[in-house]
Every structure is written in C-alpha cells, then in structure tokens.
Length: 312
Length: 212
Image (cartoon, rainbow over all chains, first blue to last red):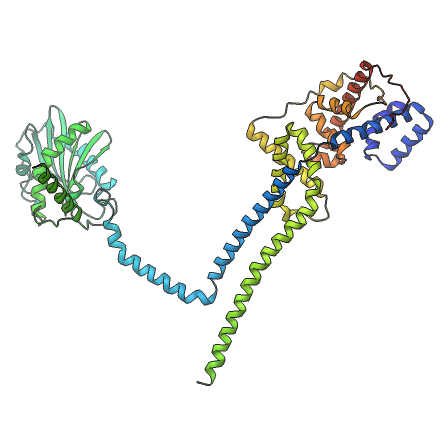
C-alpha cells in the first residue's frame, strides 16, 4: 500500500467502514511508515477533539422538562380519546339495546310530529320560492312565442275555448296595462307547461304576462303550498338577459317577463300583474280577506297600532 | 315456573356484572398499556436527547429552534412508536425522524439548503498532514466554517458514530454522496486547521503530543 492510498482510506478506517483485510493492509503500512503512523494519530486526535467539542452542547434541563411534559400531555390526550371510544362501544352492549331503541323510536315519532311545525318556521320567502324549472319555462315561452306577435295588428282576444280561469284575462289585465299595447292573447305550451300568454309592447320593449296552473314542480321545495302564498309577494329573477317577476295564488303563478332592466320590470310587474293576481286569487276560491291571518302579521299590526297611538 | 324464575334472574345479573367487569378491564388495560408504553419509550429514547440536539444545532444553527426540533422529533416518534421494531437501531430511527421533520419544516419555510458547492473541494488537490496540536475551540471553529452539507455528515460520522449506510438513510441521500461529502469535508477541515496552525506559528510537523 502506498502512502497516498493510506491517507485516502484512513478516515474510513477510523470510522470502521473498511473490510477486515483492508484494515490489516493499513495497519501493516502504518507499522513500516512513521509519517503515516503520525498522520493516523493526528486524525484520531482530531476526531476526538471534534467529538469532545460537539459533546459540550447538551439539551438544557428546561428543554428536557418541557419535552417530558409535552409527551405526558400527548399521552393523556390520546387516553381520553380511547376512554371516549370505549364508552361509545359500551353503548352497543345488549343491556342498553332496549332503552336505546325506545329512545330512538320516541325521537323519530317526535320528529315526524314536529315536521310540519319545523317547516312553518322557515321564512315564507324560502317556503314559496319558485323553482328554476318554472322560471326558465316562463322565460323560454316569452322568448319563443312573444316575438311572433309583434307585427300583429288584429285586436287580441282570449278564445272562449280555453280554461275558464283564463277567459277574458286580457280585459282583467287592461286596467293595469296602461301605456302598453296588447298584441296577442292566447294559451300556449312550447315546453310542455301550459301558459295563458298576453303579449305587450312598450316603446319597442317586448313584455309577456304569463299565467300558469301551479303544480308540484312550481315551488323549489317540490311541495304544494301549505300556507298563504300571497306572503311570498313579488319574486324576481334574471334568466337569459330577461327580467322575471312572479306572484303566486293558491292554485296559480302569474309572471311578468320582459327584456327590460330589472328595476323597470319590477315596476311594470307591480302594475300589470296586480289586477290579474287579484282576479285569479278570487277565482281560486280564496279572496284576500278570507285568508288566514298569521301570528307575526298580527303582532306587527298590534305593534304599528301601538306606535300610532303613541304618536297621537 | 315460579321456581325457575329466581335462577333466570340470577343468571341475568351474573352476566351483567361480567360485562361490567369486562368493560372496566378493557379501559384499565388500555390506560395501563399506554402508561407502560410511554415508560418504555422514555427509558429507551430520551437517552438520545443530547445527541439529537447536537445534530439539531448543526441543522438549525439556533438553540431555540434546535430545541423545538428535538421536541417535535420525540412527539412524532412517540406517535409512530408502535411501528418501531424493538431490537433495531432506535438512535438511527430517531435521527431519521428528525431529518424528516426538519426537511418538511424547511419546505414549509421555503428555505432550502444551499446547493453544495461541489467545486470547493475539487481545487484542494493537496491533502496536508493533520496538525497534531489542536484545541477543541479550533476544531469547532473550523467545523462551523464548513458548508452545512459537509458539516452534517461529519458530525453524524465522527461525533455521533453513525455508519455511512445509516447516514445515507437518515439524510435520504445515496451512500456514494455521503462518502464523497465526508471525504471532501474532512479535507477542507484539515486544510482549515493547517492554515490556522500556520498562522498561530505552530509547526505542522511538530511531533510533540498535546498534553492533557
């Protein structure tokens, strides 16, 4: 072995990384080469100095205590978790089976009984929110059907062959349709849903008044209305650049669809639809006066009355 | 029928007390087990705290950060202690976890290791003889001046006495890289010490032993 090789391998020898044979070769060389023997001693010395120097760094007592405390905390946290898990599994023990079943049954019955009450707690706006399906069908009807009648000049009259509710609808609507020009009055069903359709224009803007019979799909919740739908008031939506305003009666939905901006459509819907809404609500067999009063309405009335008294 | 009833009831209540006992034993056992496990873990692993800390200091170069790193290492290793096979090298396992924690911390801090300047050691064609007289402070100062990528394998090998294979596992680098970094790192370290010795007026070839 040459001195160069010896120096290359020396560190690995000190780390005990060499094969036994190589170790022997190295030791043999060191025996016959004093400078290499000295180098071996120096490197060993340096290694020990390095070890002593680094060993002075110790984890402080405080850090050690913190570490132990942290471990204990970790253990107690995991223990409480195990305990909880076992308490839960013990619930499935046979002894508890009957009481648990009885409790569950009582809860289910209570839930079923409470369901209508729970429902009535949702706000009227949520309860009577119209489905997107209905709104898009109305918009689509306006979009497909109304443009056909822009050029129509003949006086538009609803045929007497349609549903009794819709007969004479254009006359009812006339009182709210001031400043509008009526182009058509008919019943159509371009997408399957039947609408009574009155087509108006105002300064070039196309306006549809649509009335349709309510079904289960009309409301977002998919149920028939369980309370007074007039509470819902005017609902508005924007679909395909069209503005929609909708009123509801117990059996019908009345919509005003136009390409006017939302604010203008809102104003128009109020004036145009209100006589129609009133008319249809009467036909639905429930005049506004006969509608059941709601508690919060009463409360509000009482509150306003008391405020007014205070004013005086 | 009436005569049968008491035995029936008795049987039931007996079964009930048995289940109660079973539940108690279950809960008691798991708590005891965890406590025992912690004691085993502490007895076996906490002895390496100082050694881990020394390497952590090289990694973090800050005492507080190094203490945090050691604590995090012990928490992580406690959580996966059930996966540790008793009888295998616990110390190397702990180092490995510490490097994992450190690497993921670095990823979080977006502070990556400075890439090794492989050329640094290439220029050192001459390997000087190691000075025979050197103090701990000198060695430590020379070590501090080394790039971290060289420093850490040297500490793991010369101070902590991990094998090359273990260093490769712990640092997640190939064993060849470990060997070349050790080789170059030691060379630089020796050169630094020789230069220092020259400046201080020591004779490098001085054969006199350092008195202790």
